[in-house]
Amino acid sequence: GAVVSQHPSRVICKSGTSVKIECRSLDFQATTMFWYRQFPKQSLMLMATSNEGSKATYEQGVEKDKFLINHASLTLSTLTVTSAHPEDSSFYICSSVSGVRPDTQYFGPGTRLTVL
Amino acid sequence: SQQGEEDPQALSIQEGENATMNCSYKTSINNLQWYRQNSGRGLVHLILIRSNEREKHSGRLRVTLDTSKKSSSLLITASRAADTASYFCATAAPDDKIIFGKGTRLHILP
Image 1 (cartoon, each protein chain N blue to C red):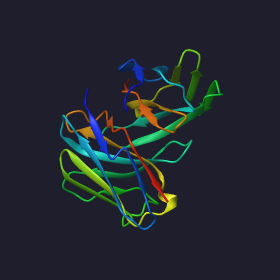
Image 2: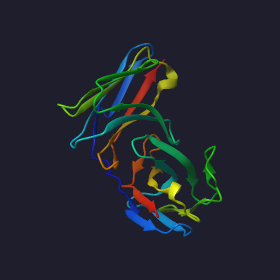
Image 3: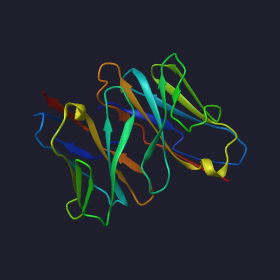
């Protein structure tokens, strides 16, 4: 099946620093990638939709200047958490949609961010 | 991260009929979540059922959880054309790591 990787799987950083998370579709071209955030014991929250070569579409309440998304190629999207604060600590997960199969998505393993 | 199993992989039913999708998993969980995905769109959260719950309702949706069998089912009653979508289950482990199934593609026929 299709494989999506995320890097890093776990990151601990100091408050005020920026953290970049990569999401790669390893064996297919992803026309669309989604970024989600999960708070403990809660469901996923869609943060933004990332389309290759265009600006990401952010969900209401998600700060675009804080969560920078770049989808520079059909296999890579990055999420940068800028000036991270402890409240940004969360589990971030990406998913990829193939242009050939828009009715399903493939999930990365997630990145656990802890901001001290 | 897709280790859960949903069945069927694809399901076509007539409008008005009930649709049942199943999800099995392998590890112990804190909760199990069902999501819907319309073609090309992000996930929409439907229901979260905790490991100590057996059944939960939301409108036309009914979710059951059997932790002894490590399985869950999603029932959509009186299906509508707008219910056509892919449905995913996801399990949240005690460390909050979330694992998705591969999804069931539901098609409601007019």
